Length: 325
Ligand SMILES: O=P(O)(O)O[C@@H]1[C@@H](OP(=O)(O)O)[C@H](OP(=O)(O)O)[C@H](O)[C@H](OP(=O)(O)O)[C@H]1OP(=O)(O)O
Ligand SMILES: Nc1ncnc2c1ncn2[C@@H]1O[C@H](COP(=O)(O)OP(=O)(O)O)[C@@H](O)[C@H]1O
Ligand SMILES: [Mg+2]
Ligand SMILES: [Mg+2]
Image (cartoon, rainbow, N blue to C red; front, side, top):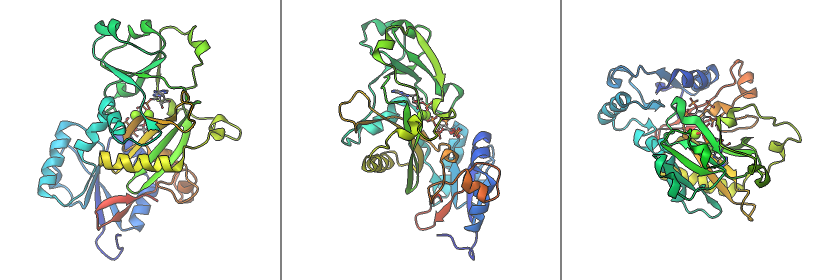
């Protein structure tokens, strides 16, 4: 752990302006400072080796100049941890390789939805397709279009879509999604609003496609007696196995994944992973106890107006940003 009497531990951060606004909040800065940690903004357009010195780099930028900049820095500073490696992050930028990591885990009662990749609309005739399905852009790189999805009810619904995309079975799951946040050794599972079930009898009258985007960011009616409150959490052991398995497979410190209960399965404990994101919005977590990231009331207690994040202890032995309190 860092020690207040020693030199501050310098974490350089390189984030988009949006991410900086939600992550580098006053509560984080003051908490970090209490722990002897300084968060210093990096100018990504300038060589990293001319900035700093840094004990650790935290980033969520993906352009090739930045990756080169990081690589130059890493080759001169091989002992400075980079959270996280661009090659590891890259796996999450395709909705194919992203879910392949889950398939490799072979954990009982978990899996991924069936999906096919569509690169051209012309060959669709020969394919066996299931409806309803969700068309998701192949790239999941945080770009403007990467969250633009379509519910597709029949073959006709495909004609207005722009390849490449994956066509994934829509799985009824009771309208509630579980988001599992991982930050180093901490993880947290929470419920969020999701798309409602599509009963078979309704499907007969549904035609074409319906666009949607970032459903789980919609304000959820999560009060007493709500669907969200009534929904049982997935078994802790299963979540733990997924967290450990994915950490090992992905070699990432900061990520979250979306899990839904498979309503088609007779086994009520079958869960599937539908999405994995690098360095998500940790500020969306709800606090109340000692958890990975504190937001809302905890941030208020700290006298900040943002519902943001209080983070960061540094384990100097392994050199990871691994304690989010
Ligand atoms: O906007 P936020 O704070 O909700 O965070 C987004 C995440 O929302 P979540 O934490 O799951 O609620 C969001 O997760 P979902 O894809 O919505 O499951 C992404 O991680 C998003 O990053 P990007 O646009 O894919 O690079 C995240 O966006 P950035 O904050 O990284 O820009
Ligand atoms: N296979 C699926 N079956 C049912 N609902 C799904 C499925 N995939 C995604 N969803 C719903 O669509 C939302 C967005 O899909 P997701 O893959 O998480 O994209 P994003 O990267 O934009 O979060 C999910 O939060 C969930 O509500
Ligand atoms: Mg998602
Ligand atoms: Mg996502």
